[in-house]
Image (cartoon, rainbow, N blue to C red):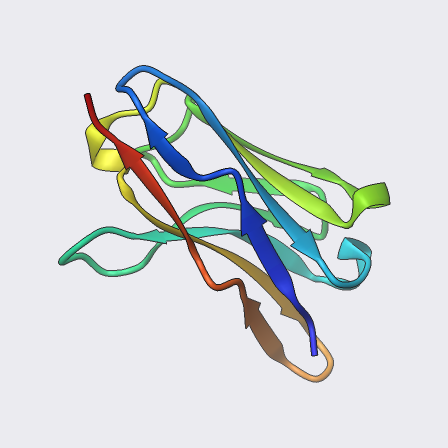
Length: 117
């Protein structure tokens, strides 16, 4: 069983920054993809940012230029640096990791990010 533990969320003012961390229970090199999703109240879960094969990045249009996904493989950790935060970024953020064999997705328990003055 893969464990993903998020940290770094909380309350931040509009225009501020947060860095989310996702610590995995094993090497992130074992994942074909790892990334962040979010779900705001009353909305569908959406992809925020992802790393595919620890190389290719994907970002939601709404966060491009503001959010950056990165990794520290020595710490089995993936980060989401969030800058210029807006109230519409308020959501529960979930770390996700995918493995190919057997085909599986693993999820963190979610962490709240609230952007409010």
